[in-house]
Amino acid sequence: MVSALLRRGARALLALCATLALCCAAAAQPAPVSAGPPNPKLIEDLVAAGRILADHGLLDGWGHVSVRHDKDPNRYLMSRGLSADLVTAKDIIEFDLDSRPVDTHGLPLSGLFTERYIHGEIYRLRPDVIAVVHTHAPSLIAFGDTKVPLQPMYHRAAFIAFGIPVFDIREKAGMTDMLIRNMNLGHDLAEALGDHPAILMRGHGAAITAPTLQRVVARTIFLSLNATLQADAMRMGAPITYLDIEEARKIEAREGHGLARTWEGWKKKAMAKP
Ligand SMILES: [Zn+2]
Image 1 (cartoon, rainbow, N blue to C red):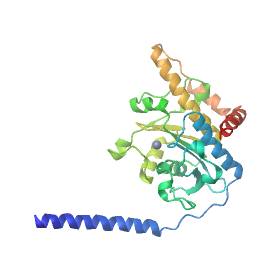
Image 2 (cartoon, rainbow, N blue to C red; image 1 turned 180 degrees about the vertical axis):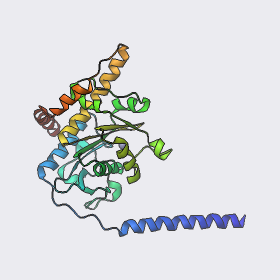
Image 3 (cartoon, protein in one colour; image 1 turned 90 degrees about the vertical axis):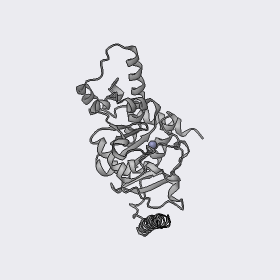
Image 4 (cartoon, protein in one colour; image 1 turned 90 degrees about the horizontal axis):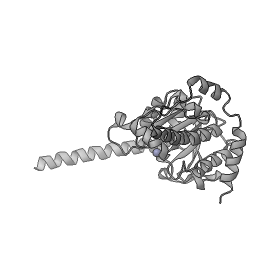
């Protein structure tokens, strides 16, 4: 009995030492160096991106949008942990690709988004990606849970023809609270994303990528809308003619046409709110 208690005590002590060693190692790591001030227009658009997606019911206090730093591809910009509709320029923080903040402006790490590793690891594996959104959009959940493939219903969502895989965290990490809480899980997600424009996360939401901030906002809006339209069409029970990959390629080649005027409209409406 006594020896069992001693063994348990020794194990607890070892675990405490290991935790302390990890904490000390983390504390000893110097904060990453800033790439310098980003273009103010980029910050303005990042703030607008979050507000537009909040306006569409696609972000709230849990989802987030980020953009790669215009001065250094190894840095990205994202707000501190704050509801997207409340973010202003002063809430934007610079991160390195390990998702370590350059400067938290006095905030504890708990004041940052837990799932920022989604962004850092996608930027690390995908040099072509300039902007990332993580959303818990309700319309996408059924497709992630059933693994019924999302298909392109209409031209605005043509990029879906390039394939939207599903990431199941259970296959990588067993039973979790579903969150991408560290670099390893972020890496697994980014690897599953591969070259695709977006990925669904079973029982959770999605991560969407694009070569510009404006396009990632548009893709998030139209991915969600497409899911609603596809579910509607599937309920009709008749055969569905989705966009062909060739049609999608032609649309993608000119994607962005008209987006600038749409973006200005979305932005004006979202930023007019107090
Ligand atoms: Zn999430």
